[in-house]
Image (cartoon, rainbow, N blue to C red; front, side, top):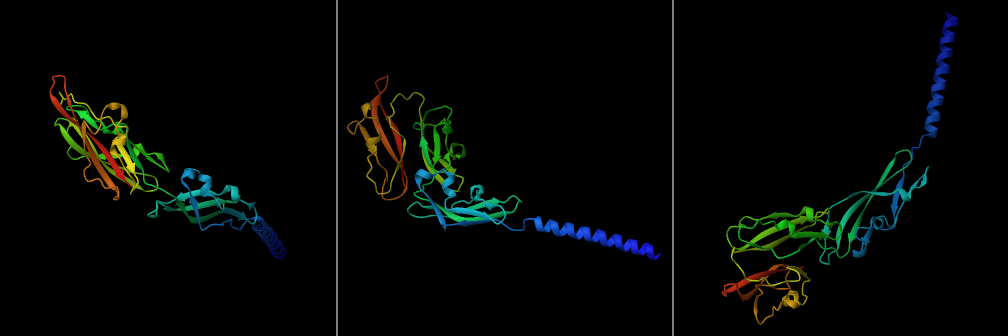
Length: 279
């Protein structure tokens, strides 16, 4: 039995030695270090001209790994937050999380602020006034669009709501339009909708744009948005400025009323509404 025991012990020691050597060799060649991302800036500022340029978001970042060396060109944006704040000057701050992997699959992350300088929320536009004839099919969505300085065209995200709009009853109605961009910034606007009688033959005051944005405190002339070759002037058209106050942000509706004669020589009045958003 002794020779058998000796052989058994010897085999055990050989196997144990081989296993130990293999484990040691594996640990010696396995990368246990982690890559690291560093930044020369606490935050990065994106100007209006740089919106949409992702390379700007990576400015000031470097990545190193003890085994793989420089990994800076492999840093990528892993996640961006909604706006955490927007100050009075329109500087919107988000948080960006960056990531990088080494060749062994180890991941490092880094988070810092990004400031969009001069940012403003999405803006709406109207291709033409929302004026319809009684019993028409009212499809407001084909005339309303929205753009965002970060996401570009966000028209598909517009949501329209109205509690009283009727195509069978002539009159002036209002619909709410709301849109949100990828950073969580929302814009809401109230848009006027005019439904005219079916036999109405009056003309519409032609506007260069039925929806305009005005900077708070800026000079503003509604007549500048009436097409110059239309023959519409303050002599033959009335303007109701409503409660327009360019020193106070908000949405205002100004009404142009012109008096004309229809095919039966009857005097008719036609309203056209200019929507003004003061920012």
